[in-house]
Amino acid sequence: EGDINSQNVYSKEILSNFPLCAKNLFNGLQQQHHLRYNGRQQLSFFLKGIGLSADEALRFWAEAFTAKGGSMTMDKFNKEYRYNFRHNYGLEGSRISYRAWDCRTILSKPRPARGEFHGCPYRDWNVDKLTSELAAMNLTAVQMNSILESCQKNEFTIACTKVFENTHGQTGMEIDDQTHIAHPNLYFERSRQWQK
Ligand code: SF4
Image 1 (cartoon, rainbow, N blue to C red):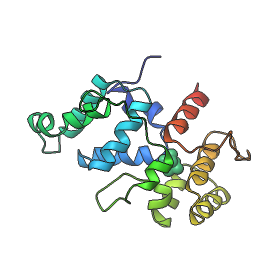
Image 2: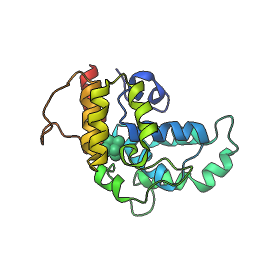
Image 3: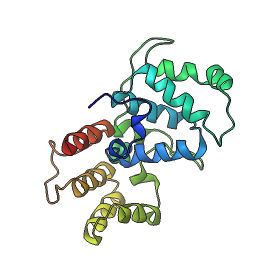
Image 4: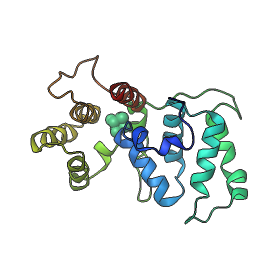
């Protein structure tokens, strides 16, 4: 099994390890062939965290932004966006290596406006949209209610942890410091491990 690259990141297997926030960004990117700043940052750091190298990341973003159906040229991408993605890998500017955003950081950013995809769906989506997403994950009514209840209590990472457990054969586990998921990259890693 090889590393994650700009092609296999689109595979069903790898996408199935994404938490909902990352899945949402991915869908937004494919729909719009673009993401606004906070979305670019959130997804870029997440992908870096799952092991996409700087070279592969540039390939990934260039392909996504200039994909058929969109209007961006490679020239525009190179002029306006290349720096941003290189910067996120510490290859430009201050050369700090930035760490993937945890849920707390994600929740501290301004909420997504229309046409934006950053943030946390457990906070930002309305009940209808969230319910149909959860139903598509084959969750039971009891499981869905419990997740929606956590959302109502502003316990978004608990909601996310419950989704993880319900979709990874771990129903009924207690959520404690060991099992609580408060970082999208932790969600990904646990999901990957479970899959193996
Ligand atoms: Fe992403 Fe964290 Fe929200 Fe889960 S709780 S969807 S990992 S931001």
